[in-house]
Length: 320
Ligand code: CP
Image 1 (tube, protein in one colour):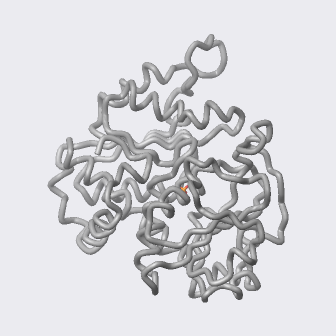
Image 2 (tube, helix red, strand yellow; image 1 turned 90 degrees about the vertical axis):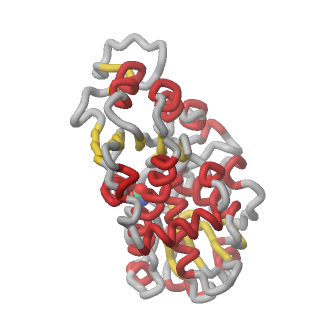
C-alpha cells in the first residue's frame, strides 16, 4: 500500500476487517516488520486520538515514531506555490517534505481544510505535495477532505457491535459553535457506501456532502424520520460543503439545537448504538444521557483507532 486516503486503498473490506480482528487479538505478532523502520507523524493541527493511536500502532509494529508539530516544533511552513514568502512562514513545503522523508520510511500527515477556498481544499493540495515530493508511503491522519483512519476504525466498531447482517447506519449532522471541515463525514459516507450496511444521511438543507463521498446514499432532511429503526447513529457536525452554493463553502448555515442527538431522537431507533469520532461538544452534538448511556460506543470506537492505524502501517511495511 503506497497511500491511505480512500476506502479503495484498503481493498476488500471483508479481508481488511479480518486483518483488523487479528491485529486486535495479537497486536505484537508483527513486531519484526518495523525493526529499523521509522514513521514520521506530521501535525499541522491539534490531535489527541490520532497522535496517540498512531504512535501506539507504530510501537506495536516495532517502528520508531517521530512526531513533528508544524509551527510549534518547526518553522512555519508555506503550502502554496508561487507566493512571495515575505510573511511569517520561514520554509516552503517544497524543501521541508523531502528533508522530512529523508529521515523516515513512512509518513502520516494531519492537515485540516482551511475552509476558505473550496478548490484548494478539495484538491488536497498539501497531501498531494507530500506524495509528489516525499517519495514515501503517505497516510492521511485527517487531511482537507478525508479521515480514513477514523472511518476504518468506525467500520471495525460497527462490525464488532452489529446484531444483524446488514444494520441500518444513520449519519446525522448536529450543531456546533465553530465551522468544522467535512473530512470525517466525507470518509464515513465513503466507507459506509462500500460496506454491507443500509446507509442514510440526514442534515439540514444546504449541508449536502460532495457526491464523490456521498455517492447514491439516500439523504433524508427529516432527522426523526431518518433515525427511525436505526441500529447505529453516527453524529457529526460539518460546515457547508458548498455543493449547492460554492459561495457558502465553510460557512455555518444552522445552529439548530433541535438536531442535538438526545433521548427523544434515540427513542425512535432500534435501540441504536451512538457513535462519534471525538472530540465532542456535550449538549451541542449529543446530550449527556445519550453519550453516557451503555449504548454509547465513543470509547471503544476511539480505542479502535490504534487497530485501524496498525493495519494500515502493517500493510505499508509489508509492501516496502
Ligand atoms: N477523532 C480524531 O481524529 O481525534 P483527534 O482530532 O483528537 O486526533
